[in-house]
Length: 149
Image (tube, rainbow, N blue to C red; front, side, top):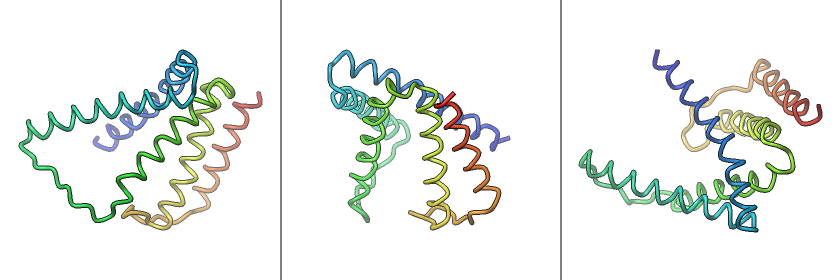
């Protein structure tokens, strides 16, 4: 049952990404600059996350652990997120939301398979099987069909 719940949560998160792209693209149009739209989105998200973190620390009586075994991680996630949001802002009006999401999911799957294969950052190692490759190729074919047809 827990696996079903986590799967649904993943689908919901994917839906949020699909909704976020056109919202940010409209914000960029309204502001007149793609990067400004991405920056505004990131700022709003950072404020919300800071508030949620502060509330959780208070409610759960937690102490934040500020030791940094890998300082580059503080910057890497933000840079990757900024690249994603900026790309989505630029690409949504050009590709459409559905095609953009198809290509994003394809990229996520391909990167995820590589991450699984090498066990990056403590992720459990999983082999790249014929079934996984077939699934990735089908997803890529589907993304291309959504874009072309």
